Length: 157
Image 1 (cartoon, rainbow, N blue to C red):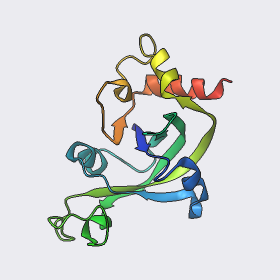
Image 2: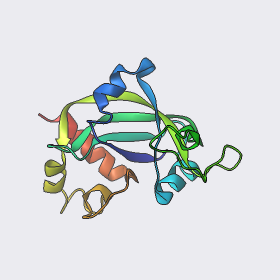
Image 3: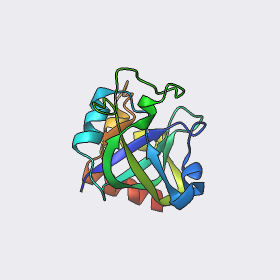
Image 4: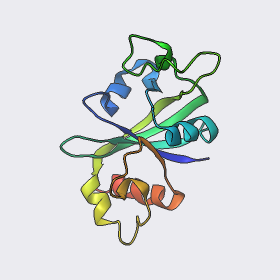
């Protein structure tokens, strides 16, 4: 099983929006980065877990856990001329972009802030991609050791 970190701006879609969605489930669509597209298309599998990370907000951080549901599929928003994610070069018979369905596993009792993650960067979370300066990827892999540490941080008051 792989582990991931999914970034979303809470003004656009938050963990509370996911909790309110039918079945606590949604498409993770609109990805327009080839590296992330390749991870979705080639590496994500049903049952993988991911952290739900709030980004570009007053207090960025990890808000909970989601589960990958099903297999990657073509991102239909790329085919829709009315969508802000429309890509005229992507065709249903030759899709350029992919999406994945995710379902809320649980919301953390508190946000594990970026500041808190950075406080553990030197020792416990060294090498974690979200902590690299300039990292703008919307989805990144998470090492098992980092996963366990963050889960323990989320459980502590």
